[in-house]
Image (tube, rainbow, N blue to C red; front, side):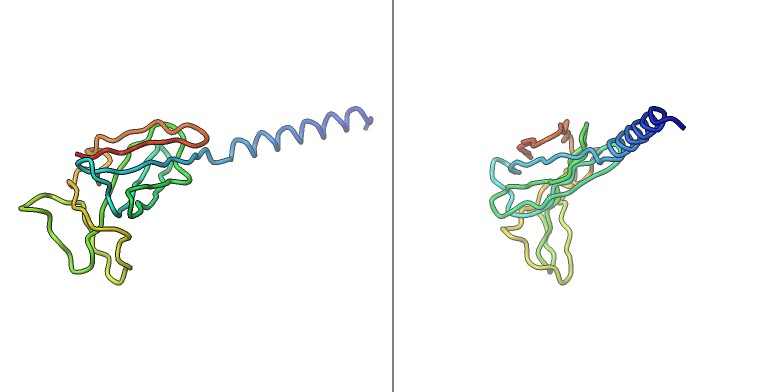
Length: 143
């Protein structure tokens, strides 16, 4: 085999490997922001970004801030859940809540806030966001 044919074969092989690696690379990005309910920050909970092929979550801190480090790039449905402290709890006067009690879990970082159940359902939350490559900011305002 001639040297030029070998070089061409090696170059083509290297190109194909590079294309496969890029094609297999996960397309994710970072999204952060603050979650508020009735203009007050949530003190705990979870935010989830649901893409067409993947999803990712991030915790809400005591100040209402969240970061989802590996949100799927593209259009996403977004959900928010809060968790009642052990022993359960009910929302004010029959308010539906998206609370869950986790036995043996550490207490949430901030005060528990009951939010409407619809925010835990991607088809009812009404929350959507187009995640782009790099860092994104998405403040989530719940009513």
